[in-house]
Length: 178
Image (cartoon, rainbow, N blue to C red; front, side, top):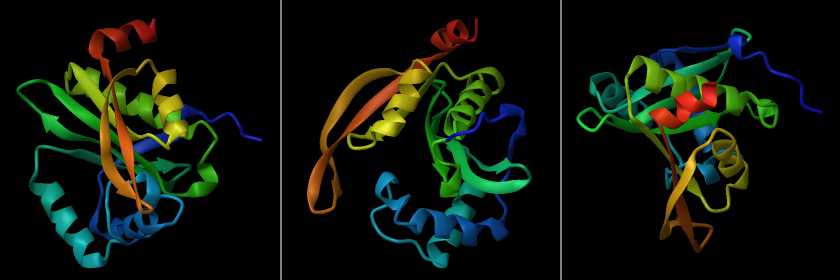
């Protein structure tokens, strides 16, 4: 039975180097890996390189997700395009005991609010693997619109899968709030 999650208990903070062990564990987890874009398992060398690139880049805004003072996941706006004011969203709830409790919806709502209100984005997109119906439902619940299918663009478990693209525009999000 899922409990009602207070969205105000969800906080974002910058990722710090000591988070890398936890991020590696989450991203390599059998429950997370199939839904992530990485193709191979990560090691600490990968994580340190990624962390160094994140600190230098203006293309991604990544955050640790904190709930009840505990890191439970990572989220961010990636592929940031400053000129066209758009980005894609990425979310991993690494602590799987929090899956199915409405936390993902609250994280996504907080993240897109940040993107539209603080960063003045016009469009936020998402790529969802065709077998990830839970994420598809989540994004549709927050008025993301299906745009297209990237046919057979993901190789997983010895098979090609489609990736579906969704997006929400700032004016569509403003309507959602009222």
